[in-house]
Image 1 (cartoon, helix red, strand yellow):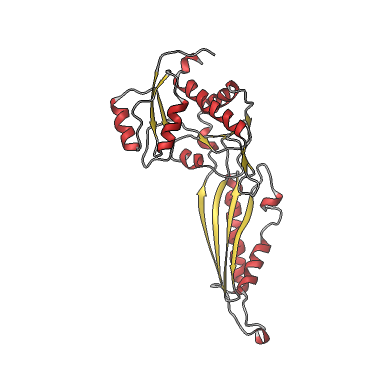
Image 2 (cartoon, rainbow, N blue to C red):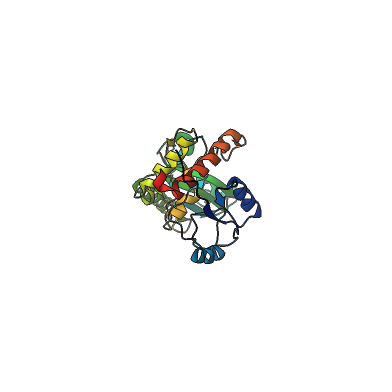
Length: 288
């Protein structure tokens, strides 16, 4: 593919000096004018009002809007990953007020807060735990538990790609908590559920060109696109629901959140090539 050799004006907005240095270096070679990078969204807005730029690159989150139509996060793993579906997500916090009695005289008096948490956990489907799910299957994940006989608490995260199943999971947990309170007393267990983020698919699908250009940029880099759902979340989900469609691209990171987490340098190089090709494709659409 041949591109117009005209020099392109690029505005780099970054809160990091290292970010500015890196991006300027990647766009060196005479085809891009990266003069006068800015460090804040306010500066970027003023510059955009007075100068006609071909490309805007925002490296780190800035405090206010920057006027982009689309964006990409670089938060994926395996080479070629292109993701625009993620979990709907909620957190759940459970608190239990027990009643501690000398164990020798506890019959029909003691309420062991730890046992109450155990009873609640036993009501949740055992097959809907992270260690038993894959693909589009959601789960309840117990991430913490602490306490004594007198008081105890636990925390869960709730995940599902389907919004309908997500809402059902939250209701199932709420109903289970109500059942526990029927057993032990209305003030024994309290439950707080908070939504965290939603599946960005419905925000991105109306803009197929965002996906198509990402796939083309990968192919130009010698990478085969691999479209699949994220079994997790990404900053792009939050941005997409704020009006900035933002799919996620690969970086080479693998085994996230584990002791064997690593990143492939070769795949990182392919990711950089993909980003540069995306810049070309968006800056010069008529040539593509």
